[in-house]
Image (cartoon, rainbow, N blue to C red; front, side):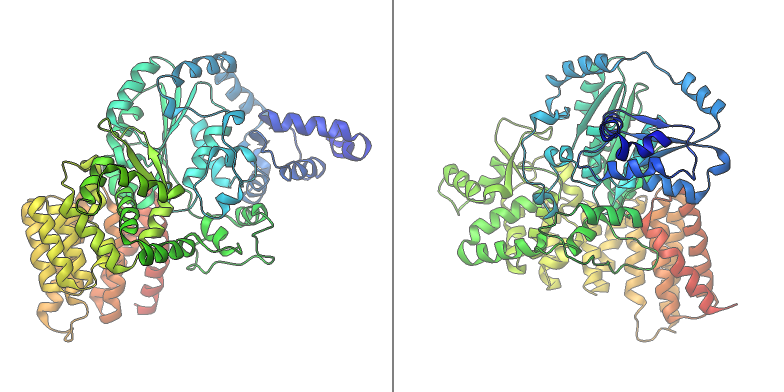
Length: 619
């Protein structure tokens, strides 16, 4: 260790030789003393080099495996192995393999022709772009990953450790927290003795075809937006030779978790450690970085996410701000062009592509022929791109916005009149039979969140929902209509709609029962006469429904969160034994869910609030 520590001053080329080998090969540091500083200087210099190093492991004896030491080593980019020499040797002996890397490459190359969309490109084959585009809000590309200019957060090591354990893994987080970036970093950099495949969507048919093609070969499959096809995910998880890592938004996983296989390791990558924050700030290009780092205002105990840090610490306009001017100009100069962009973004937010058939139907009466459609798509430039993924159903052209962030930014910045007009035209002109993968589309197409913004007048929104219901008489559509009306404080109308949804579903759909409870609660919690016995009875009924949901539904964290939020609002009005009982129940459930699902950010956010409120009420 001493030779390495002094090599930089006495023999610089030997230092660079060691550094190159560390960068190019997975390395185990063994027999290292926690108090020795020399080798850490070498590693600190290594982290300053643009090109990322391979995995680094450090063996820490049990006596030195304190929380502080492990946190310190992880901040230096190590995977930590805790154990004595005999234990580590026994582990290496049990897990040694004769499978050669050259064999893995040879087998992987044979799959590329069958599954080109799953292949991970080589460093020399990617199209290069300025990494500045990534920091200004563009989705990650392989050239960004290979550039070495994207910080590798501590979540990389967490997921890599989970993969090394052999378990199937789910990686969740809020929008724009770096899930896709992390997936691509893992795909490019992690060592795996077998095939490495990555995709952003997967159908059951494609999953079965992949399984048949692999045969007995081992494979690591990384899937972005995996809850869109939870059945395909389940199929791959059921294969003994395939290890699966799924990536998606935490809310989407929460809703689909009851259909996920058991035994998954779930990792939430939303929040960054202090070391991660400093690392991300250091990697922002000097040309756009604020001279003095800016903090992020978050709730107590909640750390900021990746793009919250980036957007707060760059001098350029945020993604939403940039598209605000684009939308304004289109609204002024070419409303039809804006409607095309909005329509594509709306459909993309529902996780499906737009077909030429859908565009022609949407623009019926507005354009002369399909050539004009192509001209207008061309004029939208890089905001749209061609799509050729597994959701393609027919021999025609398909299109998608270039990222989910772009879609959300455009929808958020669109004028209300343009957004509502687009929704009405789309659902009038485009039948579900034309809609690409309507089974996927309908899960998000009628969400109350977008309708609340699009239809500020409740009568217009209600009429829109009822028109949709005539074509798709689904209780889930009524569920969203009821939530929309509830947010517009049209409680009587909301109750009638959700009551019909409960009846249509036979009272057996727990998410609809949950919405039923929310509607009942919102209708009465702000009543001018809170002591009215009917009001109190209805609020109790709401809490009782949520208790039933928590007891019988697998998505307990979902129901515990709503129960806790309502318990807090209830205690704002009623400082009585009932309020204390609800808060105590909420505290127990949240604590239980944290033990069961430590990845759940909202549960961790609510628990201290509930505990604090309980203390304020006293005994």
